Length: 273
Ligand SMILES: Nc1ncnc2c1ncn2[C@@H]1O[C@H](COP(=O)(O)OP(=O)(O)O)[C@@H](O)[C@H]1O
Ligand SMILES: [Mg+2]
Image 1 (cartoon, rainbow, N blue to C red):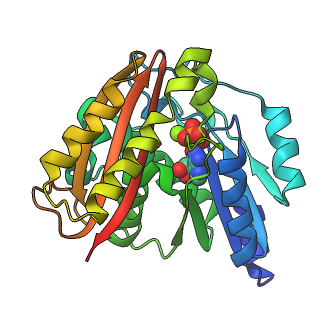
Image 2 (cartoon, rainbow, N blue to C red):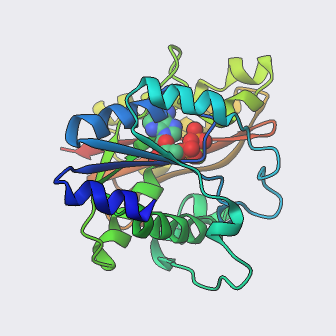
């Protein structure tokens, strides 16, 4: 992979990189579309990174269909699919990790304390291997995007990070590989996440500025659904992910909810006038 990407760059082409964990869906393909718009040569990777899963999480059952994924990527104009093995990425003597402790402890970090260390470590390795000009990530994983942008700045990667808006089902549910875990009742209930974000947006448009009041309204809406188990509902400053009490500036409203075996996340960004 390294020698191919260096050769392509030497030929004067710009490389766009889309890292994924496979089980691809329209959200991932939107990232490929964006890569195509800004670069000449598209490299996607599929690597289910064991480092970013907690001990009790779904690493073993994470959905896999590499041949179908490869077809989808090819049809959308991906030039190379990179699929390293666990052993290649983390040989026995592997020892290095990359961590941004401040940004990684907020939001998802509270219940997934080692997740972003795993994400940063793998993305750092993938960036060194693929050496893209531009890397593309989804806004669905807002905290990931903020952390990776900071990592790239802190470590002088010289790679431009592009963000792509969240692709949604027609009822608003953010598309995710984990949606296949949902039972039919859970699937019916899950759009409440996005509905509650839209409710929050409306409250803010109607001049509500008290974060607690907004979070309570979101909590009430989600609690209405019997299959929902809230992990967190947070309103934070988008720059440093610190809690906001009275809304101002650019804020991120982020939610994680369990529906059965699936832990689903979603978020919106708002600029308070
Ligand atoms: N619905 C979506 N819309 C836009 N981007 C998405 C969506 N779902 C995932 N992505 C992006 O795809 C990339 C790989 O995520 P991955 O973990 O493989 O997918 P998923 O979150 O569906 O399990 C990340 O940059 C993620 O933000
Ligand atoms: Mg994911």
